[in-house]
Amino acid sequence: MYRVRIAPSPSGNLHVGTARTALFNYLFAKKNNGQFILRIEDTDLERSDKEYIKNIFDSLKALGLNWDEGPDVGGDYGPYSQSERFDIYPEFAKKLVEAGFAYECFCTPEELEAEKELSAKNKQAYVYSGKCKNLSDEEKLKRQEEVPAIRFNVSKAQKAFHDSSELSFNDLVKGVLKQDTSLIGDFVIMKSNGTPTYNFAVVVDDMLMKISHIIRGEDHISNTFKQILIYEALGAQAPKFGHLGMILAPDRSKLSKRHGATAVSEFTEKGYLTEALVNFIALLGWSPSDGQEIKSVNEIAEDFRIHDVSSSNSIFEYDKLNWMNSQYIKKLDIETLKNALRPFLAQYDLSGLTDAQYTRMVEITREPLTILSDITNDVPYFFGDTVKVEPEVQAEVLDTETSRKVLREFYNDAQNWEFSEEALHEKLDEFRAKFKEQGIKPKETMWAIRAAVTGRTRGADITAVLAILGREKVLGRVNSELVNSA
Ligand code: GLU
Image (tube, rainbow, N blue to C red):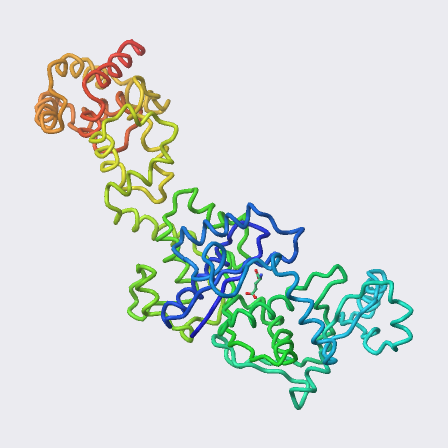
């Protein structure tokens, strides 16, 4: 059985990059009838935050990336937060020490700092000197009061399992990758405070959780060599690895806040639909075999092959996401859209509209929406007795002699009109025709009415707007325009 995992560190809200990694693991599991596991990597307690853990859960669920095992779901492999597994790691470290693949290191932070400074001075990449590698029993006895860190003995493991200092593996995405392990210094696997480092905890967990494939960002490639050696030293079979290219901003720098939203929750708060977001994220490194980019996660899973994933970096094109989101909004059925828009209409009194009026308002304002939050600025004129008129609209449209004439007559004529859309169509036709005879273009007639009633020169279907507002509000607004600028 294929088993994959997403192992986020809760040091921030779920980033779109992590969401992409989660998605590719999820797709791989789905395609191969495997299992997708969530594990929270919170060994660094200082940088971990419960808020972020909740954000990670909520964001993955919102994207539909439900995990088969992990927090809340149970499963056979125990708690899925590393901080709840702190008692597991020392026994494996002990095993490595006993087998000679790891050793106690008593170096103080000051000593290590001095080593680093020396390498920097000599313009060399820093590797640990190996000072504690061969401490005599006598020396160890002298320092028995101190709590040592534990370091992995890289050269010992390399020699035990390989003929030369080269270590290679066949990456599912990038092909064969190699590293000269003599350039890797002996690294710490257990800190002196008793907590495991990332490279060690991840191997112990992936081994115990029987993870078969590790799909993650290429920034982890250098860790992978270290991890393979740990698997070998523990006598375990290393999983298969696939490393994904990075996600870059349109300017090809690292995607960051200055480019726009980066966390899944930021996107959803702005009114991106999770279906659009997950579809867009899938295209960061993967392309559909039929060229048809708009697809559901299930359709993508059918078509997904890890070997087809591009090994190069992908660009996070906000414009493309916007386009895709607008396409998804267009496809939403009206009831779903009405509900999805509610949070973005919180500042308006929706209770003043009947359900039929709200439905009609959404029908006539949905077309230009790119993100759901666009609605907020598109609909203020549907609410309240009065309307705020933009200054240019006042000057350029309402203050003209023609508009004033149109509005005066509209105010008089419409007193007896029925304000249903059907009736208004007919009445407005007649009304425009009357002015046309006087040389006033139908467009000008309607501009005057729209400007007085909505405060704008553009917007939703005006006949529908008038019907939703009703006679009283419409004539009230027209009247105050006539009175105010008299
Ligand atoms: N906690 C690591 C991260 O968030 C996980 C890396 C891995 O998948 O091994 O980058």
